[in-house]
Image (tube, rainbow over the protein chains, first blue to last red):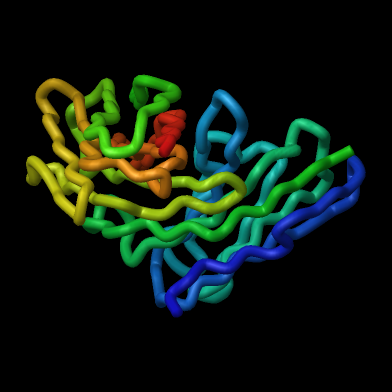
Length: 116
Length: 114
């Protein structure tokens, strides 16, 4: 089954404790992206990746890191989480980036993060 | 600034009604527009994708139209059912000088009651 898998789905942590949210897709997609969703603000892009070893900042990259060492995986790293990073996080992928005529964007189920 | 707006923010209708959800955007230089459905606590599911060269797309009871010149898209849902209750989001792929942008609206929360 074609899917985007995120882990963990739910996480409560404390300020400053490093954490990683994993994202994996099994569709051989080139483009992957991370979003956060907050009430009243909608989905905002954190980072995206056009292909292996190619990543770039989205609209709200502060406090986050990413890496793309393999095509299927795109982990999101919070080096020192703060309460304002409490949010619902989504990973998404598509076959190609926008500029190359990307098609359908597939989303993971989301990871709800609470930072105390 | 490129923005995407969805009106209304919430909608409650009786089962069987035909309804229209609206999405407006500020810049006509777009790659495409995509409509999604989001159920509570779940991820987004793609409903329809309209490329900039297209005027509409249809899937079952759903029909999405695109008018780039006026910066508008509508999602038409025919014969609504309680199972259609969800939040509907539109996302617009904009041209940008150094990086392409996919910007989401804040959604329309739809409730269809029996």
